[in-house]
Length: 173
Image 1 (cartoon, helix red, strand yellow):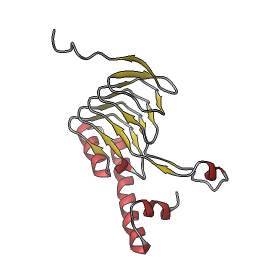
Image 2 (cartoon, helix red, strand yellow):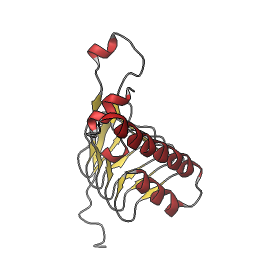
Image 3 (tube, helix red, strand yellow):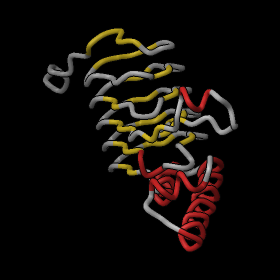
Image 4 (cartoon, helix red, strand yellow):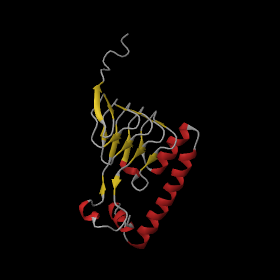
């Protein structure tokens, strides 16, 4: 990804801007590797917060979860959400090679939002700009390319709503 486009997004200019973002990127990259191999769940969450991911309280992040490496600060996760191992969550799409396809598919940076109390099972891929509603369940291996309503189960590639969840009677038993 051309550095000038990233600098423009963050409002940084000139040599000083390049150095400032370069240091930030290297810091986030090293933290990403540290989180990837970290075996203590609370440390993984803390490390991803340090990278810039906006993470609520009581969030569980599984092993080898990949967050967007360039625009980590465009990802937010609500309280009490659980993210399964080897999930990928992105906030931008870009063709890094110099191809004519870039004219058809230009870079897009889109905030990705995951609600409160969401359960994301292992191996899920979440595309940029997606919003996942509160207390939804994303089944193992789902590829989420459209927003997910609150309190529903989605599965498949592409992910589709399988059923709505009725949480009204929980705790009243």
